[in-house]
Image (tube, rainbow, N blue to C red):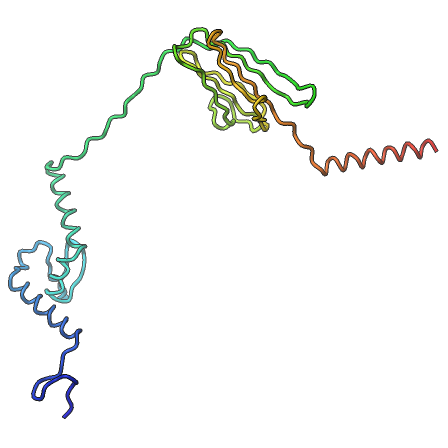
Length: 240
């Protein structure tokens, strides 16, 4: 007569861990069923085909023990908390956090647009084009320095966007904001070609913007040279 390794004569074979776990769960279910009255569970239902349903989670179970195990699980417990919260909310027992009212900052009154002067310039040596702006703020508020911003045509909401242009805006309270349409070209931000200055004595804000010279396409230069060469050859042929 064969017996498993480690067992004693006259004693059954050793049980595996799986068998022990199955029997342990059966004992726990049996103890739970003895102490819990499922008839008082509002979510417990036995359907017409003999299966057990959880009306809260909409799950099916083969036996009462399986249903009882389900009630101790995370899904069932979370649904119980949600149901309790909804019932308390419906009865007015739950205080919902009050929505914070957004603070409406009143618009500060302005005194109109500032005076300005726009001076187009061209460098005689580099042929770079530039624009000098002079904005007058005689009644600017104390300790306020004018601000400027360069924005694309799609950021402003006053004119129909045009990719050929960009905008230079100036702001200083209590004056209205003003903006100028300038070419949408690359700006040379070198120290002496892109600068701003605020004169506190005259209350004039000056700013200079210089545009970089567009680099000619190599193919265009080659074609131009070819055309020039052809014209020279034709002139020589006509003279001969």
